[in-house]
Length: 150
Length: 158
Image (cartoon, rainbow over all chains, first blue to last red; front, side, top):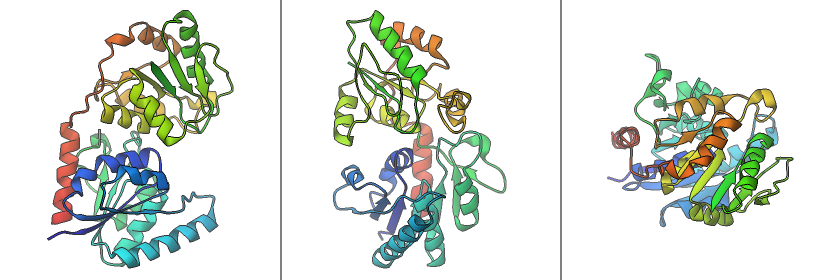
């Protein structure tokens, strides 16, 4: 039985890491959410694609737009699993996913070598699976280390 | 051809200058540079501020060696495409970045895919002298990646 997956990331390194996870979703019914329309060329044909606003901490209006876009996407997609490699769009997508009964996975960026990201720490309690990509950052109370995109 | 890329966010004069100095001494090697917000203007390299995604991809595909700041985006792209990669981390103290995460990244990178790391300009110049000895990044799946894919598959299906 195929699962409806929503895979979400912001741009640059976050998207590159999400791209490395594509094989894990190929046998599922997947949709992708990121911040640049150009990235559509990276996903398998047949998968659905959405570009949303890229918001940062200093951009409150951007957050509102992003949240509204995500609500609309959730209404259309009704994902059973929400996956993110960060940052802001993934944070909100996991919060929404949790609220609407989806299973949620957060994979903290491999660039966070010395400590887990701020958004990663904030999302912890909303992530059913909370992962770091560095074994030395794993702790008994999370995040867990189960591999990396490298 | 070599491609020098330093991202688009802040200046990285040190790296661009060091590669340009080497290019001046090695005129037979063609280097294309995407310098972002760097103030220094290369003399011995063809350069632009920022390439569009398609042009970037084309230059990336053609390059025999990628020279870069220690940004994860470039690192993973080099791995995906099996490119030789030489990186030098940005330093916060020199106003090249807002925090020292690239220095941390650079310390952990050796051992992954065969990336060559230069911590400063001297190490960079030495690495460039013997750039053909840098092994292409392995594009084959690593155990760590297979483990992560398996864990996510299991979670999705579970």
